[in-house]
Length: 359
Image 1 (cartoon, rainbow, N blue to C red):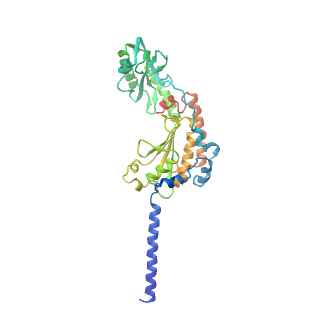
Image 2: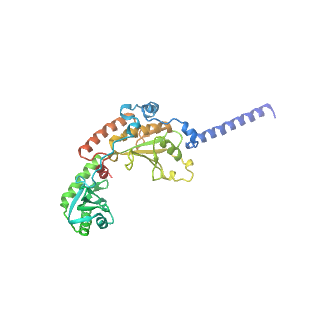
Image 3: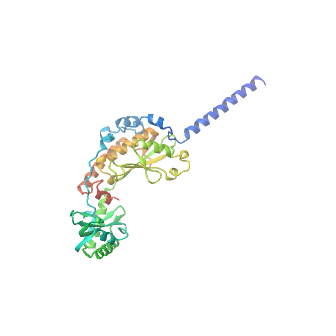
């Protein structure tokens, strides 16, 4: 073999090695990011603090800066919120109320047996409350208690729409059947007046409803579902009941979650979740369901920024447009006005009445 042949063979081998190396590098780069399996290694990793320093790290991705004064509050501030007072269930503000007078005391057991099998009139919640003889408070019928009066109610509006005449008629039928069973006499308000009131309340709800969402999209490598779980868990998110859903719990047990993080359900159910390749997830806030004292939008921005920084992602809207820092500030200002309007209407975000209306 002459020198030329040797040189060509060596050059060919070098080119082949470079092609193989480039292919391996490209394959590794394109693989979905995986969760870190080693607990000890994970424990050594510093957790994001969700404070103002995150804003500085992700500023290039947002093409702006977020005011730490407005959007970067330490999470410790929200760990011990005051316990809200118990609110009555039925309320004339959002319910049609039908008083039911009775001639003799009725036991809670008898009242429970008289309730209809379904607690809805069409698409609207239906409920019965009794006036407890001892506490003199309205409450859902309870075993072992005695009641001196009852009231039936149906909700005027929810996110499905306003109460209509058919639903009102179903309400009357169910309330009258309950009254007959407990030996009572119901009194119903005028149907047309209540339907008109339902339309007015529904119009207000439509104009003041707010469900916000940020889309986090991968800038480079895709994510496995396990990687998403691990990244979100560092920020306090826990797995929800539905696959592909994680929630940031409220500070008080039994309350709706502050934030919801969702990604493809099929990927979450995959037999080999580490092989799934996801390129986006959604972070959402149902504004009327969460009290402003929990700082939900601020925490939504903090979580989005932290995830964008740790997962190499960008924050966009539903149409793929980049969410800039100044946009977050505008939304924050608009939310303050919305909270004030809901307060003035006695339908404060996070209150029982507010949650019922916007559900």
